[in-house]
Image (tube, rainbow, N blue to C red):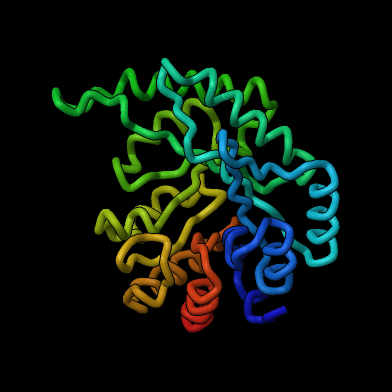
Length: 258
């Protein structure tokens, strides 16, 4: 293992799509390089990669042998608006039930905002109440609550998630890459939200987001890493990128900041 990662107060990880292969080969490839792996799972008509019982057994064996934890990203196409809530909760439950035996560190979920009537000014109360109902329903049916981590998206301010997080007793997935896209200084946001944060997503912005941290100003990344040390943050930091070159160069950037 790259022993420099043991100097970090947090569990550094990355996604399960670093080499062009399925989840198990990716976990084998990453097992001695990180401390957490984000399982990016899909449940759509054309493709479903939720692990079966034998795959879960192999994933657990790899975790035990290498000191790994897993985070699980719930499907990206969940829609917690009133019209689509029931279907999305069933999809989320399918993923949660299929990965429960992995004892994930967290389940990351999005709260999309397509049903907010921006044309008349954002009416957040109905949107937030519907998300509170949906997240509470998901928690009650799955038996998990604090394990859920609500992620901030680049399409709206992170503060919009606050009432949902506080009302439902979930944690936060603080996506710093999305803050970069919004041109927001991440450090003040971190100081506010780190006490409720179980997972951080960190990625660079080049021609798009989810690229290597080498695209970013090194001083900016160092300010993020320094803040994590200052706060003694002990959760997961996922380098949420999706190819080997971006992973390796991002790890070098983090290494250079400690």
